[in-house]
Amino acid sequence: MLILRAHHIFCIQGYIGKGYSKDFVKNMDKVVNSLNPDALVKIVTEADDLCSKCPHMLKDHHCDSQAKISFLDASSLKTLTIKPNYIYKYRDLLDALNKNLTFKNFRETCAVCSWFSCGYCKNGLFKNKT
Image 1 (tube, helix red, strand yellow):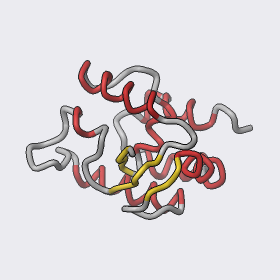
Image 2 (cartoon, rainbow, N blue to C red):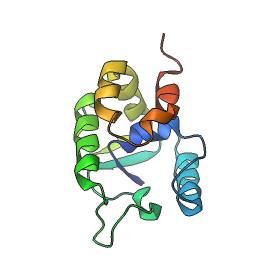
Image 3 (cartoon, rainbow, N blue to C red):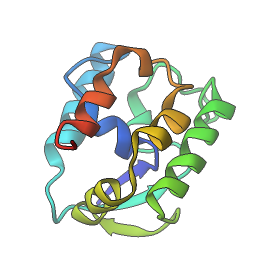
């Protein structure tokens, strides 16, 4: 079972092999490659399997931008209508994305992220939407 922050469900959709560091990218590749529709994912609002190799994670297992990350998680939970500390099948999380995500709530949620301006997430999240 994977453990993922709520907002990382968004990030994974736009992932194209780039990241903060080589260790981060290697870990992100591992996580992304392990996902399949039946994969079990526990949604959390704390450090997760991706954070473990992030250079922004502090020794106390919080992000050096914790307020921003907490906002991203809370907004993602609301947008996807999912709950923290629940276990979902990955397909159900993707269904929640497809059902609930609009460009407006994507922008409201993700505009604070340093990756937002790159467009990777937008391209990944909206590639199949008209």
